[in-house]
Image (cartoon, rainbow over all chains, first blue to last red; front, side, top):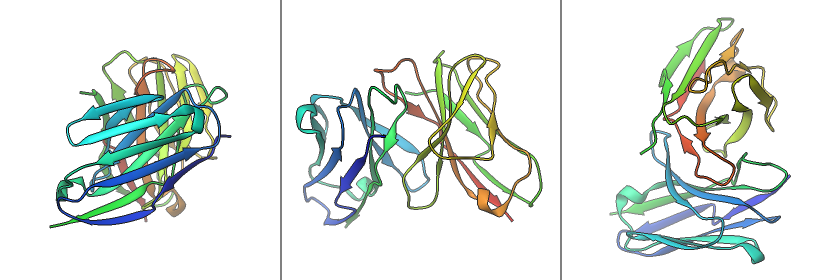
Length: 110
Length: 112
């Protein structure tokens, strides 16, 4: 099956800093989502982005499907951005099923 | 805003008990999924359904079972809970293959 690698595994920032999270995948994808898991365990949808670029406030994402990676940008980070960020992908063989990466643990200090 | 609900949010139960974790969505989505997540780890697919009377096992082997009698409802059952079943269980749904998936709030299960 498709493999998903996220980097870095851990990231510690001061409030106000910018960051880039990366998601590499091993095969062509037709589905890609970024999620934020809050401290209560809930997965919050950030972006559905199998290709192209999207922006939502301080967050933006870019997927370069031909090169098999996606980037999540967080600007002017806030303490509420802390949590785990997951990339999840689907390919032709998996249909609508999503395969998750191991996540990036982000800690934003005041 | 996604309308997908899981109950209970937290459950502590003794070994050997039968439990059912509930998942309901009001969006009319055909596709529904159950994922299992240990603390600090990635999510693993354990069951999925593409519609009423359709259920399939996922990538991670699980002793749980599921049913899909109604479009909006996708319960997960453990016939005899064991401490190794302690984990978080997350339910998701989507309308089609090339659409956004939405997750419920999850159920944290502890088997003592």
